[in-house]
Image 1 (cartoon, rainbow, N blue to C red):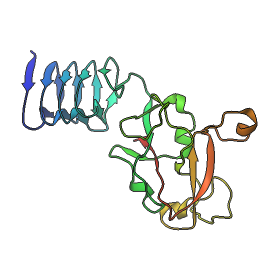
Image 2: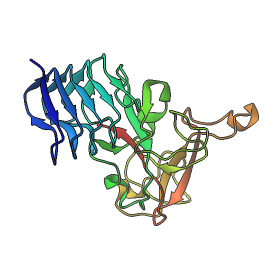
Image 3: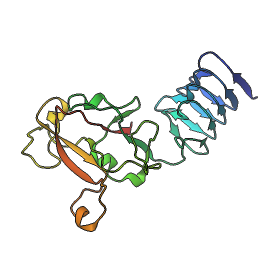
Image 4: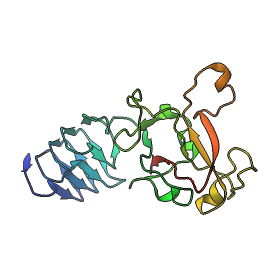
Length: 223
């Protein structure tokens, strides 16, 4: 049976179990807020956004269209969804982004949105396996659905705590594991694609070391 959940002053429906085959439209908040399974719903023109889902919530075969905020926040798609902002694309790719807000090295671990964490370079070094979140992330005129080039952001190293700005080398400086220190690792996708410029680069592009007291964007990836 299809239920019609229209024009509520807050969220359209909040559910912790299975939510299936509903029309949820024109609500002032999110159309759906759920920590369970969301399947076969039409979620349309909700002012706050299409759906706000727990990170472990699964969703499939839904339509999220014309919503005021993002189509979907959180959750894991298992296929068949339609979103007009591309945020519920089928497949296993995790979302990632370069934050619009900035943080110094001590603040970097808390700079990402709910459902995301500060990325290690090795979580984002192959963007063909990922989806760039254009709703949360910064972009450029020709970014399209991908990440911007030429912007640097803080990134985790996978190394021991360290922060000597002039020592340790690339990949070994991390603001004392993002608590203090002099230098931390920054990375960005290369804007110069000429062979001579890119011969020694990491797959992710440019890397460098930044002063921990400097506010910079942060690379974030979905939990």
